Structures are given as C-alpha cells and as structure tokens.
Length: 258
Image (cartoon, rainbow, N blue to C red; front, side, top):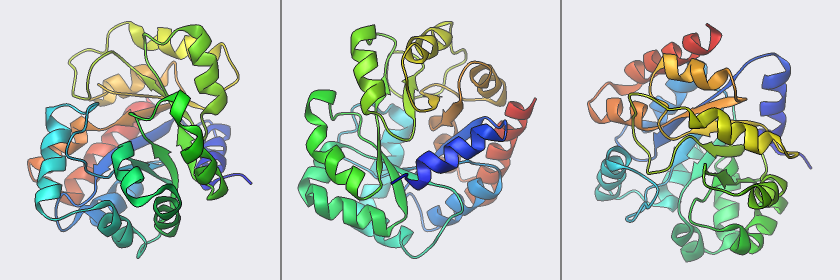
C-alpha cells in the first residue's frame, strides 16, 4: 500500500508545486501543536516532527538547545506521539529522531504509537543502510516511510542503494556538517541532487542549512523540495509563537513561488 507521505508528495509535485517541509521540535513549549497547525496553514506540504534526544549527533546548537529544553519539560517520544494522536492534519507528519529512541521502545511499539499519531514517515539519521532493514520492514507494514539521507560525500554506488531503500522522499544533505543556519548554501546543492537523480528515487528534498526565502528558492530550482529546520527553531526559541512561525513559513512559501 502507498503511504500518505508518498501519495501526498507525489500529488504536490503533479500540481507543479515545490515541496516545503518545516521542522518543529515536539514539546518545546505548551503551544507546539499550535505551531504545527500554523505552519500547515501557512503552506507546509509536510511537517517534520523532531522527537528530542539527549545526544542528537546530526543537530547543531539551535536544535540541540530546543531538544534540551523539551526534554527538561519532560517530553518523551511516547508523550509527544500521544499529543499528536489527539489532532489530525491535512498534510503528512514525518518523525525525526535517533535510533536509541526507537530501540528503547521496540520497533513494533514505536511504529504503533507513530501510526496512531498520524506519522507517515521517519528520518533516523544514525541508522545505517546496513542496519535499517529490521526497522524498515516494520515501518513498511505500518505505512510509515523510512527516509534515507544522501550526503555530498556519499559515493554513487551507495547513493543507488540508498535511493532504492528510501521511501517517501530522499533527504539530500546540502552540505557536510550538523544542522544550522548558513549565510550561503554553496555550490554543492546541485551536485548532491544531480547525484541522486542519476538513479530511480522518490522525490528529492534538500535540508541542512536552508535558512531564508531566497535560499529556499535557490534549492527549489534544482530539487523537488526544501526542508527548513534551524531557522524556524531559532525563531521559536526567541518566542515568536505559532503566529510568527506561520508568517516565517509563509515567507518561505512565497520565495518558492517566486
């Protein structure tokens, strides 16, 4: 069966629209679910839900700070997914977390909780291609797409295998390093997208470093979609709230249209 993530993103592209995926940290504050509502209303085509973890190896200082704040408020994967299960959204939700969180709960339990929370995709950056299959089989059965990452340093032979295993979309890492805002994306974005497009693959969405409407437009010119994390999370840490989050995502949406 086709997951909601796969079908929705395909329909988005068929309408000639660039995919926009903002990232929201679960449990950051009391109105984090309202932030999800706001970014969806502002034009998000899917929302990445960050389930906080104490050692987020791919995340930079901003998202680490947000994750720490969330954990200090008592957020767990179970509590965050339970909160999400009480609402429904017209776009797919994609959980981003680390394998320790999933292993602690067990594949079947985590997948069941995620499915009940309307999660239709999962990004697990520390789960390698060689070790992904036990989780991915459970996820496939629950109609949760396992999204694989391709970095600028990934060789073509491995890129082909990652494209073959990835579901929903392929996460193209814009540049080497951890998440965080960048003044410039550099010239490597087109290279990593072109490398992925050499093989049959789901839509290609670029993340890590995309920070402004202008950069979103730059990425949208070469990729199927844009993922924006730290730039939004920093603003949320500064207290912009749901309304401000919606306004920022609306500016990204406008940049993609232009």
